[in-house]
Length: 235
Image (cartoon, rainbow, N blue to C red; front, side):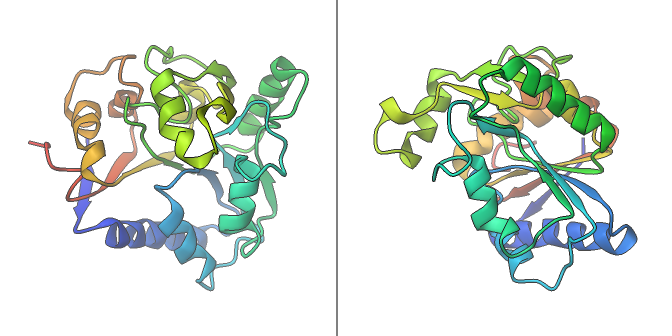
């Protein structure tokens, strides 16, 4: 499975920026699947500061905490508005509604949005336990968008964004693994030595539901973009 290693997250993020630029130059109406968290922050900064025009493009986000309204400072709606959309509005931008009182209807409607707007470029990060989106270890490879329970390790990893661990949501609305695998192209970004062991497991270990990102070994057009620290254990 292909991967590229860069000196640091800045140069790695620049490489992904160039991929965005190329996609838009080829097709201004590209549908981008977007991720949140610290991994894509430098990429979004580069996009904000560029002259790229997303006014004909569409974005579809991976996930949203369940139980948080869109205007909550830790919601992914809020994150995307601050990090990208305020500076670079898209023709249409879709995120799951974390405040819905009918999550089953919401996830069904969201999967329909994905089917109606096939994703051409999907950006991913990777969790310390191998999750992509909020698809935790053990998630079925045939799963579609759904309400998921977050593992304790994910809750603890996200605690830094909240005042206390009691405030961290324990569920999320997330694209499923099969939803992600529908994308024409998948780019997984991983930076830092703390991601190095799970990157090695995802790239060079067996394809297993216990390491959700390992499913990308089966994708016809997936690429890992890494810094040297995240690539530490690769053979």
